[in-house]
Image (cartoon, rainbow, N blue to C red; front, side, top):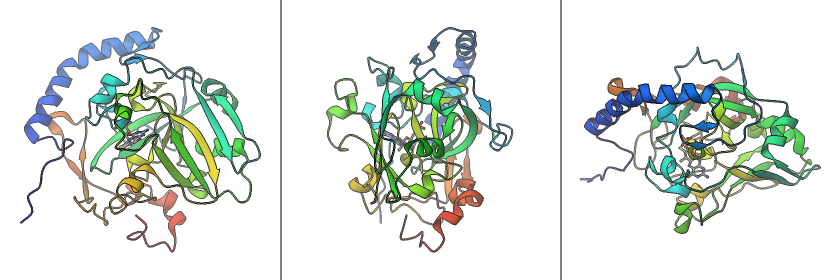
Length: 322
Ligand code: MTE
């Protein structure tokens, strides 16, 4: 018989409830802070703002808040995976706001492109022409989910700016390296910096997004300030945070989790309820932020975005290419 050790993300029912009740109690306090922030105070509830250009964003009517119920801001910004700042879900909110600077910040476009360049993030947003808001489902490979109102711009716009050469077939994204301020990077187990990749046709799909904000405010550090990738049809680990470089390549980059555990995490990482993780089922997901009503829901193929992305994988065996 298998003896299963619960992982730290598997909160017991009672501790999850206690946490939710605690947060509800603090909600009033939080809303006050948020109100003050919107009135022009330059401090977010979690530290200094970064990448401030482009706000307010305009809602994209194709992905409106009315179609999905967004998770409360306090859950999105306090229950995080950002191993550069520790492995606990509450570590990033604590440790990413102690001395780590996300402004100024530059991102480099390199590799098989006609227009290599290094941009200041705020200048990049201005060049792209402003921000839009999209409400997307967010499904982690650990079988929990949220709904996030992201602010940002389509990745396709960045690709157009880079002007890829015909031999470019993939994008390799690299996150920052700063072991002095990122406590998690003082331990080498993950092999820093964090790396992710997309096929070029995935990158120009209408859903692929670069986020610089949440709920109409600049990204808090723990969510990957000042800019991170969002690919809502894929597991959350593809959504690399705090990007410093995007390189266009002719071969598939080896992403961090695939390098660490190739039998558990692949290059594609498309949300697929029919392909279980070797250690747990992917058929359903725990909904974060539902408070005492928290529950599980059925996981959808491509996380509910089959219409937009299924065509990208025609003829590909998704049980082998996971
Ligand atoms: N990016 C970096 N640089 N480092 C990380 O540890 N974790 C990934 C992804 N991007 C991670 C990262 C994982 S596993 C998930 S589920 C999402 O970020 C979590 O994003 P969130 O904290 O905004 O929900």
